[in-house]
Amino acid sequence: MNSIQIAGAKQEFVDQGVGQVLLLVHGFPLDHSQWNPQVDELANHIRVLAPDLRGFGRSELGPDPLTLRRIADDLAQLLDKLQIEKVTYCGLSMGGYIGWQFWKHHRDRLERLIACDTRAAADLETMARARRVSAGIVRQQGTEPVAEQMIPKLFQPENLQHRSAEVESVRQVICASHPETLAQAQLAMAERPDATNWLPEIEMPTLFVVGAHDQITTPREMRENADQVRGAQFVEIPNSGHMPPLENPDEFNRAVMSFIAQT
Ligand code: MLT
Image (cartoon, rainbow, N blue to C red; front, side, top):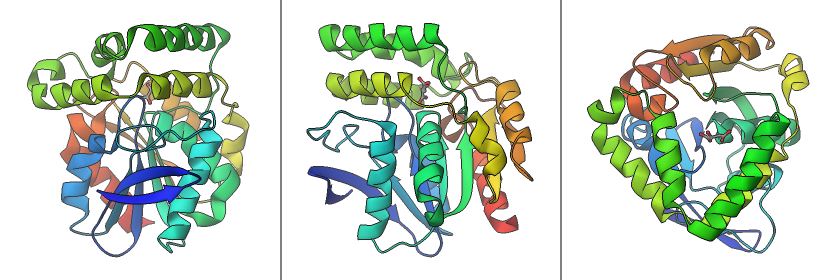
């Protein structure tokens, strides 16, 4: 892991390979390790950056409340510090919500956009309320209830057995997270703006990729989002729920590399 100071907090990231840059932005409540199969394979062909977002993994939370805009700004500052002009941005779920912010505020840094298992819409009020409750629970009870609640939703049911090593490693990441980060990230996601109206304005090669059995951000909803972006590609990854980078890394890596090669 590499380490850098951004806006008063230590931020850690993986930086491997040479050439054009793929920035991999993890979901909630995970860290850079959700991209291990991508770093291992894709860094043989291109340069791969996989940060632990502010407060997650080994990165510090810092003094200010977490917002998705703050994290998008952190990523732009990381690129400044590494003197990287442009990237292919690839964000999964919460990483995708941050991706809309990155497009809105730092689009000059984008060569391509990859939205994985995510959505453009804001939370419905019921969901936002559930996140506020969950923020209170994680502050009081810690991270284990979050792991118990989320794991069955993240993976396709068969993969809870077939991919037990990956499931166990995700469980350990969630349990080792800072409760305050998870609470603040839930509140930040509850307050995120609706990006649906931004989709027709996106003018760059864009790929939407989703696990065929994703129950959090369904293929149907992602296809509707893809239909709003001119020329966007849409790929469904078989044998996968919400976590195609871990559940079916071969197909996921193929989809990403073929999109980068074609565009
Ligand atoms: C994620 O995987 O980042 C979360 O499921 C996003 C969310 O809670 O909306």
